[in-house]
Structures are given as structure tokens and as C-alpha cells.
Length: 282
Image 1 (cartoon, rainbow, N blue to C red):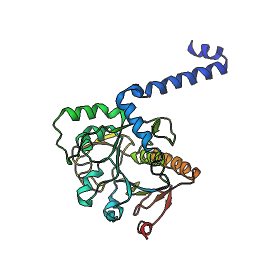
Image 2: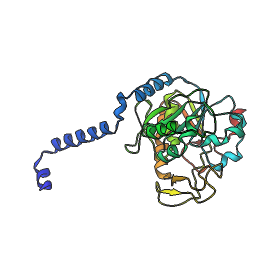
Image 3: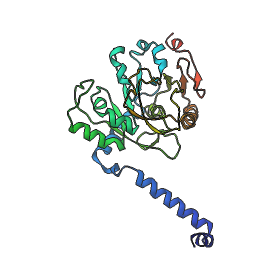
Image 4: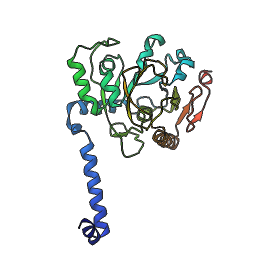
């Protein structure tokens, strides 16, 4: 019956109906909160950051094992994006990243107290707001003590609709990796050059991409064995989808006369121009 009905409806009308349906789905996916005070405040703060670093350089720090072979002391004084649990290294480094970004639901659920205590601007996905609220209701056994409590900057990140956003106040496709979100944020802030380090783009853990697993012991895929250590729930990587995003980022930066460079020591990613890390400081 449904098929006969579809066959009797003119194609242009069907196309319009599909477009309307898809538009309604996008609207439903947008945080009800385009009117929520937290979301409105995040949009305002993102507006302040728009092109705030125009013409400057930043480093996007992945969390791969290669960080152990990278002289991070060189990043003192540089603009840096940290991701997820990179704060585990802050004490050893003797400095924090300029910004911290986390969008994965499992990471935020399990690390919200630590993330909220960081003394840097923290960007989180809007869907994580309940985890944030829950963490604030509990006594936070935090790793760091922030000088003051401030709400995270909430991002409207999504799993579907591949695109590269040049304005972070709108929808950001996650591209199966928080690194891709950082590339969009860096573009939004106006950085002319974004340098990747610690983005190894290879994992010893195997299995169906995006499957949720619970770690049974030390983590071999990040710079710290306790990063996703025993008992931590995380999702297996989706490197193919990540590469799709990276290619979109490469085209967006190139079209704008900007660059993404890959200075990861021994990294397996082959999308961006490779450079020697040490030569960036000569």
C-alpha cells in the first residue's frame, strides 16, 4: 500500500517531503537549548572566540603513545588543544593546554569531575550536560583545583551528516574522533596553522569500530597505561570515518589559505603534510 502511494505521488513532491522530514529531524537534533541559558551562554562565548587567534599557530595534541617520544616542553608558550584525559600528563609537563576538548559521552560520564576542575576553557558536547550536573551534585574528587567554577562551553556535536564547520556556534560533525572537533574549533578561532602531534592513528586494540568495551588492564593505545585503564569503558576506534573527516578538514584549511601539518612522531596518518616536530621550532 505504501509503495503504491509513493508511486502515485509526483517525484518533486516526494523530494520536498523528504527535505522537510530531514529538516525537521535536524531541528529536533538541535539542542532544545538553542534557547537554554547554558547553550546561549556557550554560543556567546564561542562568538568571542571567533577569529580570536587569526593568523596564529596552534598544536592539537593527540593522546597516542608517541607523546612519550615527543619533547612537550617545547610547547610552553604555544597555543594548544588537549583532548579527553590528556590532563593526566599536566603535572609531568609542568603546564596545561590552552584548551581542553571532550565530546565522547563515555569519557565525559566517567571523567566529568576532573574535566570540571581544570583551570582552562573546557569544551564539551551538549548531550553531556546531565553528566556535568551530576558531577556537580557530588563531592568532586578532582585531580586539579580550578581557581573558580565556570560552566563548560557546550558544543552541538553530532554523529551524522559529514561536514566541516567553519563556525563552531553551529553543528559540528564529530568525525569519529575528538581531533576532528578540535580542527573545527581551531578554524573557528582563526588559527592559520594547526599542527597535529600524538595523533598516532593506529591502535593495538581491535574489534568492530565504535563498539563499547571495558578495559581489562593497562592501556597500550595511549601515552599513559591508566588512560583507559582497567574498568574504563570506551569505544573502539573508527579510523576510516576519522580519515573521511581529516580529508574534509584538509580541503577546508587549504581553501582558506591555511594549513594542517602532521608532526606526530612515527604517526600512521597519511592525510596531512608531514613535518619534523623539532624543525617547527628552529
